[in-house]
Image 1 (tube, rainbow, N blue to C red):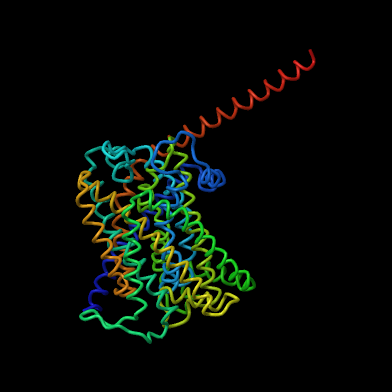
Image 2 (cartoon, one colour):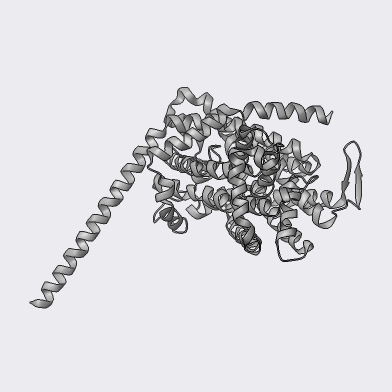
Length: 492
């Protein structure tokens, strides 16, 4: 039965993530990249600077950094650790190249999403909460006649949170990491009637995780952002440092690994020995996992960006853009290189987090147990914050679907916690396939809106930087006049 379900899911996944959707997402990023004059490259230093500087007198619920951390909490998760391993395992090393390529163009897409989220956001008159995201910029930017598209996005957004990125894949990654560390040989099993036998560590992890998620979700966005501001930067630094140590300790193998990744991107047969025969498959796995990781094009991050304390859509767009840079171009690239240079992708019988765990054990200058512990801690906290972030996204989507009715949100939270509890007992392949399907379906209405509103994005960007340039020119003139005045005053 499960094999038949897995086969059906794989066929649906192949249809959803076919060439048309990949072209739609990449062309959207390429169009914005060209029209914005490679903004993601030339304005990245400014974006990184503004990431830590809150805007004076900004309007919103949380700071720009808190909004970014909330968005990062939903993006930095199993996609960075398990997703990259899955992409390399099924698509070969070349998938890493397409993960990076998708992320570069995705930065322009993420910029546009953040900008539109702030431009078209509104405020809930009852609660005073800032409301925004694709459903609002579709309805307000494209017109009320497109409200059906906004509702379609919101529906798929609820499904992604409940059945995709938000729950099953994250919890499955956490339980796998916990099991690999505490009970790698499945020596301590518990039989659940009608379900099967599972390691007691998996059962305990599902119970503890469900309780922790429930306690945080009660506090809403501010509680989620508070947790994210502490956990996300801390764990990201630990993970980056760990992978950096791995790469440095194997620095002589890096050139060969990079060459393998590039060769595998365009000639997979030469690298995989014929196991991966199509460049399309490599692109599909790389782009799908890249989008799963950074969510550029999905339309999820603008839901958090809309709550940022800012009056400038462009400013928040730039801050949002840094999320894709940190999440994918930095973290996913480092993970991919570590998997390739240690040969973890070639070890048969390994699946999901086991691939990255093998890379850590072989590449780090520590014992296998210490390496496994580091990876487990990083994965647990990354996935935990992703679960929190996606509950917020899903609730905003559901709130839009129900016209602001708060009663369904309470029911949804219980369902969400239940999904977190059930997640560990699903198969890895089924979990990631379900996540891929809903990701693709969610991306379609959002990318239609990005194409339709790309002119608005370009105009807002040009106007903002033109005004910024005028202010800088006036400031310089004032400084020159002030210096001349002071000099003349000293003379006379």
